[in-house]
Each structure stands twice: as structure tokens, then as C-alpha cells.
Image (cartoon, rainbow, N blue to C red; front, side, top):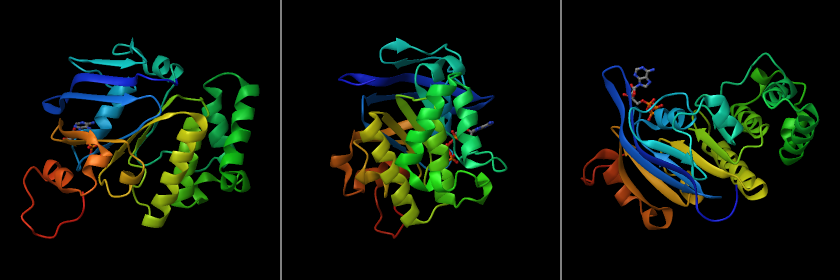
Length: 251
Ligand code: ATP
């Protein structure tokens, strides 16, 4: 999906787990080709938001549209077919399967083995380390390589929107930079739109065009990344109070 207009629109989503309200009226917009980051602390509702967009959880109210098409009641497999791919938190690759087998499994979903083989070749050219490690069991890859594989797996279905849930989780800062460079390369070269969840805005700031701060199931802040570079507004929205001057980890 290229061109102008919003690729994804989420309007007033409400999702609960029994008595726990995880999303309490969340609205976000993601334009075609943009990198949008949802930043928020543990339990803010970030993963719930991605699951709801992907059709894994139902909203009591609200609407999700993809390229203008209402997908609020669509099944996850139909949403995937419409071009949405989710890289879940913790990556969830098949550790006993090889790199190549992990990619193949993702390709089976599309049911076109010729096209899958050609996309796999493209992925390995784009990220040569995956090509070099094609016969390795995925569990033997480093954390950064596993994240790369998880993203590669998401690309196998040739999505137009990739949602990545906390790509930096458990990775050293240098590796996080590599993962972000990789995501940005995919966005530029394959023309995809990126929606990324993170607990900290520090590293994503360089790549994001727009930032949403989510806390307590509500959007606390939404602005262009360029307007948020000094970190003050993010800090306030993230913690829910103005900075006391006390030293805290950067949200
Ligand atoms: P994290 O960074 O820890 O993954 P998050 O921002 O992704 O946090 P969610 O995982 O979406 O937040 O959780 C939002 C709220 O919903 C939290 O209060 C969480 O405890 C609750 N929650 C999430 N999953 C479940 C579940 N399967 N059953 C019950 N409550 C859940």
C-alpha cells in the first residue's frame, strides 16, 4: 500500500481481559510508509493494541480500518491476507528448526511456493547473515539474529504493514541499533509501513515519524517525533507527572 492517506486507523478501541481494562478508548493513525512508535511502560496496553489490530482480540467498541477498509470484525488470517504481519514480543521463532525452515513455515501460509522461494532469496540477500546461517537451528542464533529472523519471517507474506512488539527486548544497545537499521531498510526498500512498540523511546526516536505514549490503556501523548526530541513531554506523559529533577531511566 503506497501513496497518501492513512494506512491504518484505530478508533476508540476498548479491550478488556475479564475485569481488567487493557485499552480504554485508544485511537491511533499511521500514514502509508510511516514509522510510528507506541511507547509505554509495562502493562500500558501496547501488546493488546497490536493483538487487537491483528484480529487476535476483539474490541467491545471502536473500529480498525486498513487502507479505509473496516477490519474490526475480520478474522486474523484474513487480516494477514490483507497485508498485516505481527512480530510478537519475545520473537517466538521455532528454535529447533533451521533459519531456512522458519522462513519456509511462514511461506506455507501464503500457499505459493514459487513466490515464497523468491521472497526467501530476497530476504537472504537483504540480510546476508541469515543466508550464512540458513542451516543453523534458529535457537543457536544470537538475540539480534533471532530478531532479524523474526522480522524476516514476517516479510515472507509480503505485508504492507509490519507491527513489531518490543524489538529491543533483551538486546544490547549496539544490536538494537542494527535491528532498527534493518527495519528502516525494509521500510525504504519494500515500501512497508511500520508500527513499533517500545518501552523506551531512546532508540526508536531516530527512525519514528510519530510517537504515541500509552499508559494505563489510554493515549497520553501523540505528536510528531520532531516535536518530542528533548524528551520532556514524553517523560511527563510516560510517568504521569512533571519531572521532579530526580534522575530516572529515559522512557
Ligand atoms: P509489556 O511491555 O509488559 O508487554 P504492554 O504495554 O504490552 O506491557 P499489555 O501486555 O497489553 O501491556 O497488558 C495490558 C494490561 O492487560 C496489563 O494490565 C496486563 O496485566 C493485562 N493483560 C495482558 N494480557 C492479559 C491476559 N492474557 N490476561 C489478563 N490480563 C492481561
